[in-house]
Length: 237
Image 1 (cartoon, rainbow, N blue to C red):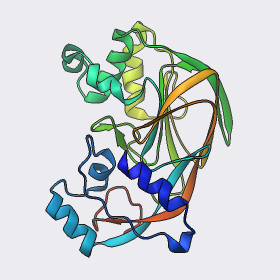
Image 2: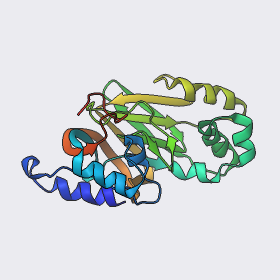
Image 3: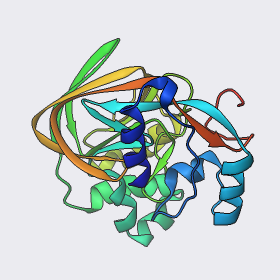
Image 4: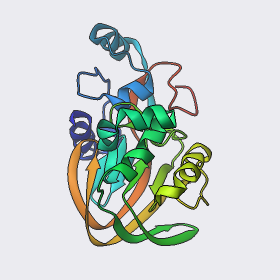
């Protein structure tokens, strides 16, 4: 995505030389701008760029790659686009549609090890999200507790879910506990993923592949012009 290209360019500069970034959301999904509360109307967004205040925000790093919003690992955000409407109606909120899609489709599951500062987990599953922002895939709240100024990345991991465990997984998706049986959620300064095979990863719309990757938050890396009530800030600009 365009924002991803901008972030890579900014990170080639020294911290002092990086200008503030303003966003006029003209992309396909505009997930990051939407989550920030940036107006979709181009004139209103441009006015915000000219008159708004810039706040220091974190960015994510995946090995030598940067990302602003999210790293979608494995099956990723496209799940929502192919979830049958019947399952969405049956399970309620869009988030449950994710679980339905995982069960309804022949999705490849990846086996590997996830390392965090306080634990190491080995297992398999179809998808994980490492979020600096909160939403991906055209509006799906994948890491709903994320803030862009807390020095942390939010990690959502989906493990293998048997058909009979769908309701348990749906409940865990609401609770977002680090200790769920099928759904796990952590807030962490870094996470490492090591897999048997290379896994497709989507970094803000840019496709890459990793079999070994370290994700880490880079605090206050750039300045972003946001509305005064930006939901992704834990502190006001």
